[in-house]
Length: 101
Image 1 (tube, rainbow, N blue to C red):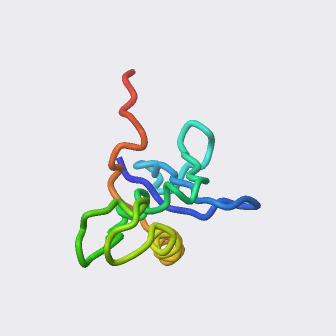
Image 2: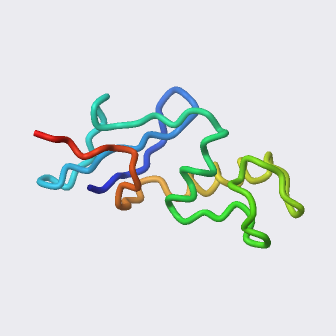
Image 3: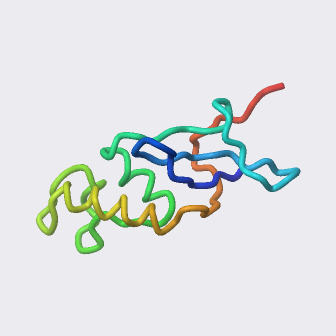
């Protein structure tokens, strides 16, 4: 399963949408999308798209200060990184469970 990153409309945050494998289009209904609205979650989401919170030490997930950077800096950088990745498609790292049917 693949997912695509979009910016949420009218509210701060990002949408993670499943890709319909038959049509190759994203699905944005409640069942097939996840809203990531808390900036505290941005570093984790960004990491799934290739972001590294602190390339110097790699000892933080981006929500805790490290010797080199503050969490606030890393969270803002994660948001900027996500903005640069809008429309990107990756394999789902676990936002959606496989449906049993």
